[in-house]
Image 1 (cartoon, rainbow, N blue to C red):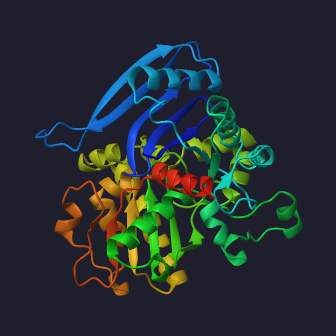
Image 2 (cartoon, one colour; image 1 turned 45 degrees about the horizontal axis):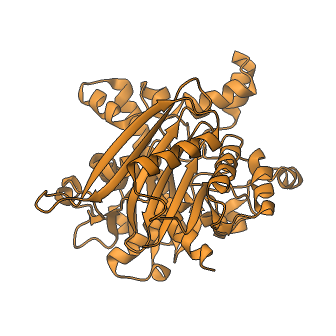
Length: 408
């Protein structure tokens, strides 16, 4: 058994998974949240093979605790207690390495990187580009290194997969010296998911990833789409921040920048108020009052006109990007949908592609509507482009990259 511990740390919480990389199977997972509040919460789930005849592959046993958790170091202590009390034993399943999700690697980190004091300094310096994420990621790294001081720690960056973008794809048309001095360019995000899905799609089709032109839609509360040419990201919808691109749960996506000037002048809105508007009060929430597409679809079915328009705006943006990326790639071999909406909303998938028959894309209605949990094809047998639903697994991808780096 080769266990790898994966950490995804936020400012007041962190998620973790212990994965056996020999079987690529999760042994345990958990969430430590409300760190720094009067009362925190820790949830720990142990996964074990189901008894024969149970009809399920695994059974999950979950335990929860509420207690004060002062900081991330205390949170790791709570996590270690959960492993000791509920299993699996970290003495018998000691991680050989710890992998950390880090949101922003700027233009410095092109690949998973062994964490050294210099790497920590760089992650901290890049906090100016991701002030809500990198400091939290770094807090998790430092707490984890105190808890697991004898194993390699590896940073896996959300932005790294998109470092293959060409200058014409990542450069914004603003004053070049100003952009350079403030490191303003397209970075792209969700890279770990886009990499995992594109490689899983190639494996499913039995073709090398290095010969495929792919479009991957990662559609969750945060959403992005990436054009991948022979395994390399060549265009992606998120930009300098995760705000750009598709309509999302609470983010606006693409917007004329002059709208901000207009609101500042006419409404007297401050920079912080505009930031809050576009990141937390826009998207589907701003259009229809809910960030959850399930609520939107239910409202559409009941005749809610705001919800209907919100859904049409959402789909319109998906189609626009699909068409643009087909043009950038010169056609596609495969289009994949992943994440919460992408994996579970057949209508979104169908509507996003229903005008693209000219490109040889044909979605099979029955296959698209059929429920399923694993990777599956939803295009017709005659479709020139394979359309797939590919469940993403960012934690497994982080673990794979972490193990690769730790083994040298």
